[in-house]
Image (spheres, rainbow, N blue to C red):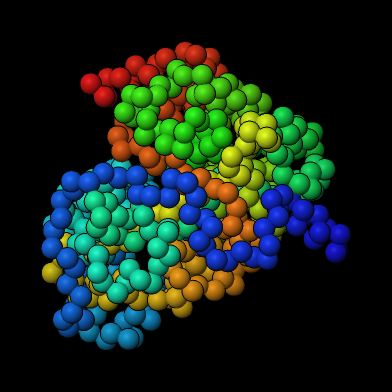
Length: 433
C-alpha cells in the first residue's frame, strides 16, 4: 500500500512542498481583472440597517444547492427576520440570460457572474453595488480578486478558485505505467497511447457542450501563445487564429482525435462525467470543479490534475491553468441591501467559506479557510505551482470566443486545421467590424 501511495504522490510532478494551502502563489501572470475602465458606477452598497426580509440568490451551481441550503439555514438562525431563496439556472442559460433576469433586482439581490464578458456586461449595466471600502473585501486574498474589479472599483468578489485542466484518474494512470506527469507534448501523447492500450478512453471531452468544450483550450494554448493575453489580442485584431501558434494548437487538436471518446463533438458534460466516473476514462477534460460531481456518482478512485504540455519541457512556461470566478455581488437595485450584504459577509466568513469549499469540492479565495475535503487536499499542490489565469475568459465578445472555440471542435470532428482557422477568422473579422 505504501508504494502505491508513493507512486501517486510522484504524479504530482512539480514537487510542491506540503499541501501548499497558502493561495498567494496561485495568482499567476494575467492575475488582473482583464477589464477596462469607464464602467457605470452606481452608489456603494448599503451595509447598515435592519437585516429583515428575503433575498434572492441567483447562481448557476445546481450541484451546490444542498450545501448552500445548509448555510442558508445557519444564516437564518443568526438573522431570524431574514431569509434567502436560491434562484438557480444551468450555466449555459445563466451565461446568456442572467443580466436580463437580475436587472432591476427581479431576481438576484445577491448574484454571481462568470469572469470576463459577463462580469464586464453586468458592471457596465450598473447592476453591481460597489463594494470598495467595505469590510467584506478584507476577508479575501487580495491577489485573487482582481477579476471582480475594474476601473479601480471592487464590484464583486470571486468566490471560487478552480483549475480549468483535465481531471486524472490516478489508478488508470498507474495501470498505464505512468507515475509522473508528462513534461512535454510527446510524453502526453505517449500517456494517451498507453491509456488506450489498457482499454481506457484516454481523454473524455464534452465537445458538444459550449460551456465546457473550451476548458481544454486553456491548457492547449498556455505554452503555445506568444503572450499571456493572447485572446485579448485576437479580439483586438493584433493576433489572428491563422497565426502559426494557433495553427499549431489546432494541429494538436487533430492529433488528439484518436484519443477522444466516440462522437466527442456531440458529447455532453454529463455523458463524459459518467464515463469518467465509471472508471472508463483516464482523463476528464473539464476541471477541478467537476470533482464533486464525479464523487456524487459513487466514484472512489483517487484524483489529480494533469495539463497537457504542448511544447518541449524546456519551453514550457506554465504547468497548468487556474481561474477565480463565481463573482459574488449585491444588486444595486435591491430593496433589501442590508440583508444581501449580511449574507455576502456570512458567505465570506472563513468557517462558512470552509463549509462551502469542503462540501462542494472547490477551493475558495477567502483568507484563512481550512480544507478537510480529501480531494481538495489531493490537488492542493497546484495552489503553489506556476499557473496561468484561464485565458478563455479574456474574451469580452462571446461571439468571437465562440468562433475560436468552434474551430477546435471542428478540427476534433475532422476539419483540417487551416480550413477551421480561416473560417473562424472570417467570423472574428465580421464581429470586429
